[in-house]
Length: 124
Image 1 (cartoon, rainbow, N blue to C red):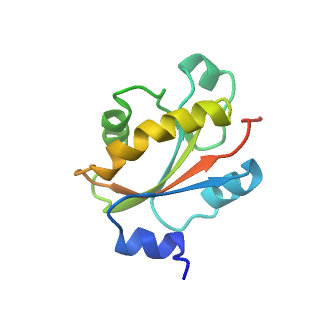
Image 2: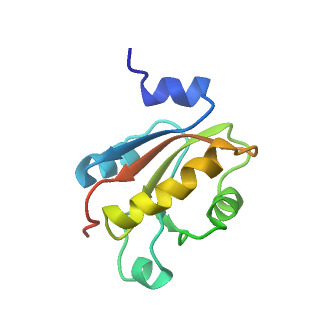
Image 3: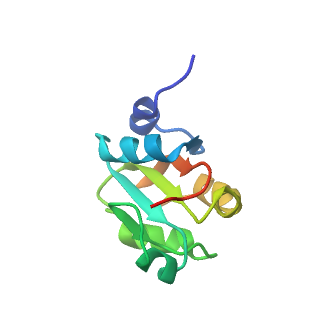
């Protein structure tokens, strides 16, 4: 049985689920979401300023990523969906690899239950 992101969102799980999406579906999921979500552009500030997806906030990926995410997220929400993208799939995958361990240990709210990441290269 495959659990929908909505079920995972409401009932949670120990580790967040990571799921790649093509850009069109990635943007559509963010725009049509019905639960608390954040879209995060993990590129440099300069790259973000040169163009980004509508609704994205910029948190360049570093060892302080989770701390910065927690500062910007609404702590009154119990759970959230996280949408993440970088310059290309390789940079996004490198960030996701580091994120997986940190998010599994996350103690603060909102807890990230599902991470959607952009497959392929980011395009404006």
